[in-house]
Image (cartoon, rainbow, N blue to C red):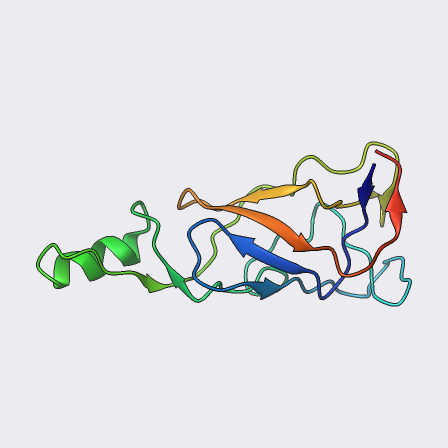
Length: 128
């Protein structure tokens, strides 16, 4: 079993320097005290916030900043690049016709980071 992930949930990227809060639109969503996320709530800037400075060696901005610093590793501002949905989603609960996100779900960034849920935003229990 896992916890339902809602708008305002705390997220962290494995290459980000700071946590961020998940944004979930109310359109066609189930709400408790906050709207519940589904696996399609994966859009950078709309749903997924920046995580401070990025230290992913595969991020072009980090590569450019490091090059400009004459090879001294230099983090760059985080701009998430998430292309695929959250995985795995709930196998039994759907929200707006897509599997709900639970606290075990992860989201991959194109620059090798893995975004995970640090705090789901509320304590509603989901069936796996």
